[in-house]
Length: 490
Image (cartoon, rainbow, N blue to C red; front, side, top):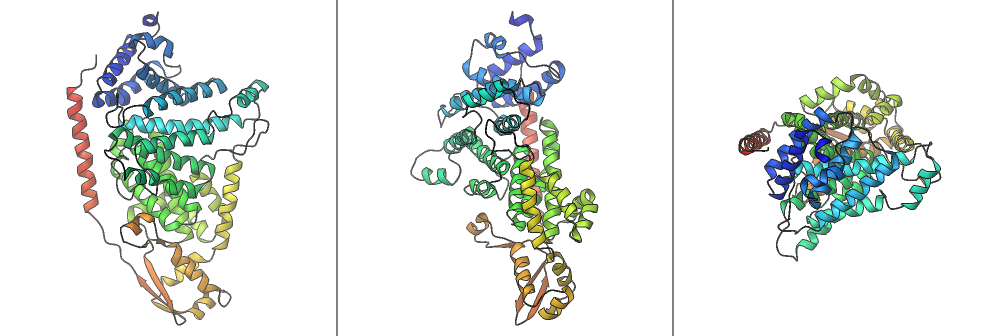
């Protein structure tokens, strides 16, 4: 029966993928996952579901490990193509994720019984977090039936924040990444397999995203304190993971009023994507990556408008190209312009305050976050003006600067300290390296004996990082080409 239901090429793909997983051939798995799965989807399943797990199971002799991975692909395709069947589809996908995660967490730490490539690891975690959002967005709909409400009441732990975060913490612990795992690892011998280290890092990025969706930005930032992400982390090589990490960190720092760190993460994320744009079209998450790229430009526009800071020429041109009119309006503190840009860069917040018998609107979270952000903007509305005056001189009397700005006596000093504080980055990673605080503004100043002394800082171009990243990128491309020559699928 199974043989007559779906195309022969799909059957060959399923058998080949199962064989590659059994043999732990990561190169074959990666090619089949990234290329063949997308090809089969576009050719046969654009508007329909993939073959049901019940039909696929006989083809692989009921292989439990393969089937739970296939179900993950099946449900992900259902969400991407918007073919979900209501709450039952959400609960079915949740149960499959629980089965999948329990199997992975039960694998041998040093030598797992099967492996999957980094791209699949990221897509798995990313889709898990997305379906968490999709479930809570669905349950906030005003047209839920009584049967839906009963189903929600009978399954209180399905897609709950506690359950989702707990499993992500299990992955971080299994891979021995994060602050808590680093302390535990000191007393244990051996190290986990790269599969678990990769999943652990991606789980922490997923937790950052979840905390951001729920409005707990400080908690999201603290999650990654034990991971060195100041450079190109070896496990954050997947472009979508890199984009998600830098976008959510940049946004979290923006709304916690740490503008220097926000600019730094936006800048690093945009530079990485610009230099690795050749890798982006390979992934089905291409649209998501480009969206986060645009949002990071918007974050740069907001942060540099609130507390002016120096940007590289290319980034400054990118911000101007996308937000020229809003930037002009934000310079004169137009609140509507700030509101427009903030709405375009904010994530889709999760309505976590819902109960099973209420119907809050899904965008309530955005309205609350926007209100808090605009209140902060209103409180520092003269900071950009102060920055403009400081750029015109090397030394100026505080009283004269006060008269130029029309400020009250004594109020300017507080604003100067605010500007100096907000243009310095004091991240834990920099402090561990002994670098102290990094300065993101292109001017620096000190206030002494009633005088403001200003100095301009010229940025030096760094070429070494560019060549190192290019070498690594070409090594990755060469490795993939050589691997493709060795692969025989059908």
